[in-house]
Length: 97
Image 1 (cartoon, rainbow, N blue to C red):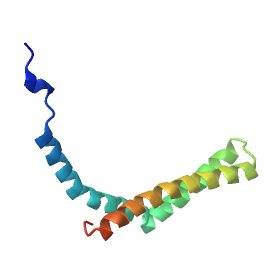
Image 2 (image 1 turned 90 degrees about the vertical axis):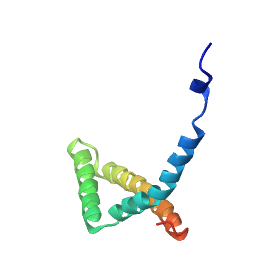
Image 3 (image 1 turned 45 degrees about the vertical axis):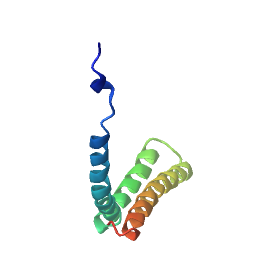
Image 4 (image 1 turned 120 degrees about the vertical axis):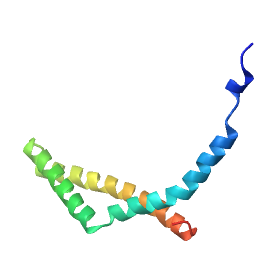
């Protein structure tokens, strides 16, 4: 007969995991947000965008199309940064960050 304990959900352990996550996650989100909006991050983003554009042009993509693709690349990054910032700000507003 199989051991019934092997099919049990570890409710206590899951609860403890959520407790740790709720305690630690706001700080992690704030650190991620801060890393996106630092001077170093701005310089790094500028380098990444410039390298992306240059790579496209070097591969023969017309300047206008390379510009469009670079804007799309930058907009995608911005959406991600905005999402991180919003989550982190929400945690700060809740008094957890």
